[in-house]
Image 1 (spheres, rainbow, N blue to C red):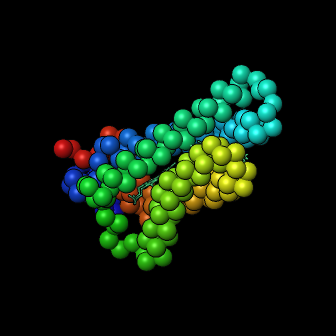
Image 2: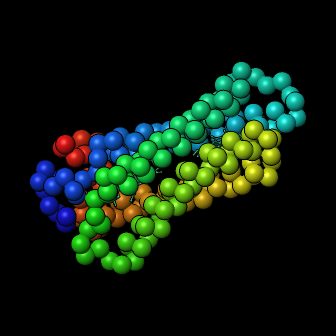
Length: 176
Ligand code: HEM
Ligand code: HEM
């Protein structure tokens, strides 16, 4: 794993092509989801207060729902794929603190991406502001996990000098 040539990695040390595609699709969808989040807040509040809203607020509001549910489907598919086909092993010699941190971060990312869309849906459906507030709070926790995750990926690449970052890149999936 350390400094090996990525071309020679055996299949079991690689992610599936489906998993890699969904990883980067989720990154793009999440970026957009955060970008339109403010309009969703206005759409949600406007709906509760019975206000007339401009077209952009309504469009981005509905888009937030559709994209959020797409993220739910994508992360559920990734989890299924991981259970069915396994994930590449953590590299040999990885310090214990780093693998514990990685596992906690990955668990947090999966859990939040599964729970957040459901909480969002329930708050929107039932106009429940308390659940809406927890959804917004969770979006901040998600950002913290994403930051930790990116720091971990960069540390692997530049500090530990492993193939961990290279093997999640498009085109590096399993051959069969
Ligand atoms: C993983 C998927 C999702 C993420 C990352 C996400 C993220 C966010 C963010 C960043 C905000 C705005 C926070 C702010 O600007 O203060 C927000 C607001 C909101 N989102 Fe989501 N969202 C997701 C899925 C959903 C879904 C599927 C629904 C509904 C079906 C939804 C309903 C809402 C509602 C109702 C608000 C406004 C809450 C309030 O103002 O109290 N979200 N979301
Ligand atoms: C922005 C939102 C992101 C989310 C929600 C996310 C989520 C995930 C998840 C759930 C995994 C699978 C871990 C596992 O099943 O054990 C993963 C793997 C990975 N991600 Fe991300 N990721 C994001 C962004 C990024 C970015 C920007 C990078 C690169 C700088 C990156 C690099 C990696 C790497 C290298 C792996 C493989 C880890 C390993 O092989 O142990 N991710 N990501």
